[in-house]
Length: 101
Image: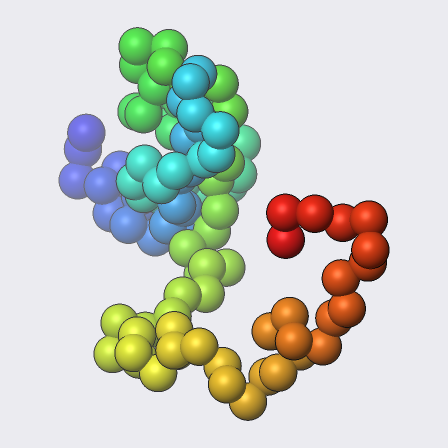
């Protein structure tokens, strides 16, 4: 790759790549890559992350579209919400015919 090509790639948006394996039930994060658009991101993701044909589905998402929780907030963010009583089953009456709840 020439210097100008490398500089151009750095200007391309960053894409997050998610792959679903043949035996997998969900997509998992495989890595990131730079590409000018979604179609090229998909092709590059296929070439980079599914060389042995192990993937059956690929998602590419612009990194700017990903929203994540902060590791610094992990304790308060994931604490059970005691202030949201509707999340607890105490409000519901179990119908007579229902078992195994």
